[in-house]
Length: 126
Image (cartoon, rainbow, N blue to C red):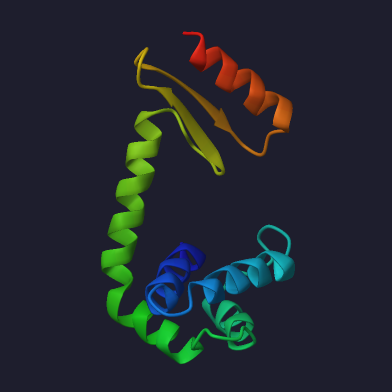
């Protein structure tokens, strides 16, 4: 949750002027990602990583997290609840929708191109 809240704070900070800074930050986090349950996603570690990303003000991100954490967590929980209603319990997840046929499909998890191609064809032909 800490990383998710920080993600939204970084985006709020840079979206107007330097949206490319968000993608630099995002890529840097993935590059420096540690193993599961290693503590790499602690607030202190994430802020330390953020300090090294050009165009992102780690102090402003920290302030956002302190001032807006409850609001952001509520929004994230709302998104998670909505996803759960569609049977999505992980990321990445993709919903494919054919408006003409009012039919949908989903892919959950990282998938190869062939799986996307099959799913898109299936929804198009529904």
